[in-house]
Length: 182
Image (cartoon, rainbow, N blue to C red; front, side, top):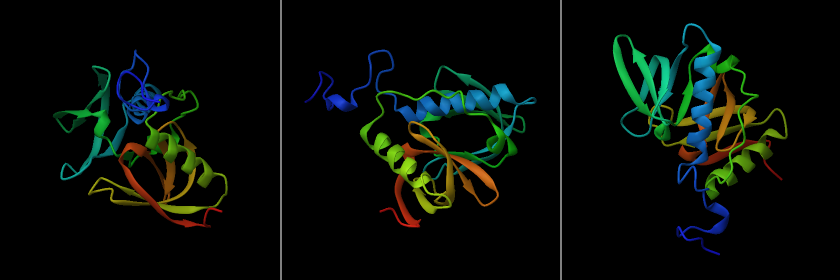
């Protein structure tokens, strides 16, 4: 069945939110939690797709216009489109932020729902390692272990001794799952 917007009925977003993917809506909540829970505002690494690469050790300042995050890199003010964030990592704040209040999103795109379900299945057996192949040249293949939280369109997982938050919108494939899925 196709809705009036031309998408399959199970993928249609609600009228209030429009076509914004759930990974971006969840990242807004996560970035706001990082800003609210840490004083001074935390420094993080933000990985972006393609040649934009990474913004390393940037201070989170505020969410602007709903889906933009303002960061500072030294004295340089940078406005980042949250929809393009592949991953957030590189700080104790990402390790320690309490994400228990992040709500589940409705009307995720079909691929985001499928990847969310896959990572929930991967998280069901611990320990389990896997690679997330992302669209970021800097983040590239994220060799991960034990997803700690799986949200609508976003996963926080362990990489080495740190955690990283990855947007499933920008995951191309999941491979080297060990132990394998049944």
